[in-house]
Image (cartoon, rainbow, N blue to C red):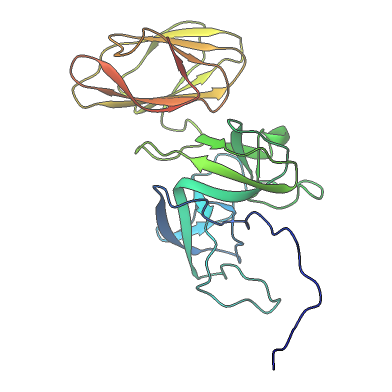
Length: 266
């Protein structure tokens, strides 16, 4: 005799849950141990104290490692919440697409920031996501973008694009271009643009055979126009929004584009 355990059902199911991998496309997952606290699925985590640790962000400028992936590997905690318990291994996605909670309405192409400092509810969950600095309470994930049209308080898909040089938050060890004009060093792996003073222009000389060079807009106060020597397609690169980034490869003769997020080549 069949037994029915419920008398009503949802006609429309949720599109996803926080931390759910968005598709079967190319993805990179790393493993770290949860430091200092339990960590929910779909949260931004930063580098921990020990080599094998990761933790929730607690301040600006910490080294972003990725987003915690939902898993069924561990049992629920005493509060019947399924998450990564402190000192348990976590799956962390640092390349690919994943579902997260967004504090603001977003559309495809919007930049991705993660909250490191709690504000008043509903902006009080550290590690969740939005599209701006939130008055300095959030840091940007360079090379990441929202990929769905989602209302505030909903689940959105983000794409994390790591071109092989790491997902970086701040220009701690890289060059920042803030002048209205200038030459970009080819010695650093990444050059950041800060156009607080308005439209800026820069040049990029030839590299060495096999060299990769990433350019990224950190602060948007106007377009950043870059003119690389011997660009394979076009002559200029225009960065219009914070989060725009491009990775170039020098083949001994030309700079070719191997990864692009929002940059217009002309």
